[in-house]
Image (tube, rainbow, N blue to C red):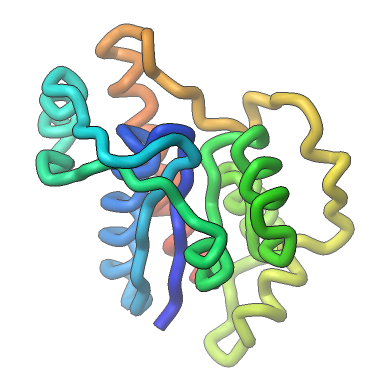
Length: 179
């Protein structure tokens, strides 16, 4: 079974929503996967009611979610690690350097995966990841880039949250079609 982690900073909106959307999209595509989410900040926090209401509007139930701080061991167990930003990607790769070949921002993986093409039915997952990450260097991920980041809506308007949800839902569907 394929294992993927979706990572954001606090694990209070982007990555939990990404987990729901990606698990659903992969399931609809017939991909057997376990999708988890985590953050790099302290764990044990509940999602604020205002965020829950926005997610519920979009059909995403996050009411039982409690934030989870991702561990090095959990990162190492994943077949794929998808972060919401370059900054988070750099942080998780520093935590667990061995994940570099299979760790990407969500938009980066989608862009590179689309360029390489969908995984062939008999293609080894690691071989496909190698093709997706070919000629990729860590220095290319320095700084921020809107093309590689899913903006954190915290502190923004309700519409900022809705925009982020639509972006993550679309990327999740597009990613699932690659598998």
